[in-house]
Image (cartoon, rainbow, N blue to C red; front, side):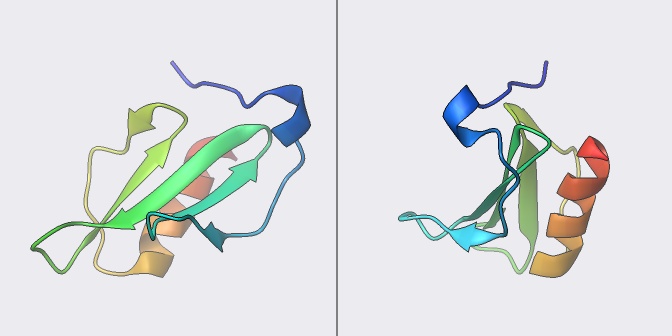
Length: 71
């Protein structure tokens, strides 16, 4: 189930870096997060509360995959 952001966060945003060092954005009211896998040279992606069931070789590939899940 995809979680939607509260009404104050429903506007689309650009990618930004969180305090934890993960990349995040809001797209169509859905919170996307991308981060680097610990101990591996890969990235994970989350859309709402669901992780994408794959790892990515670059930050950009993970970001595109997360955005594609929403589009």
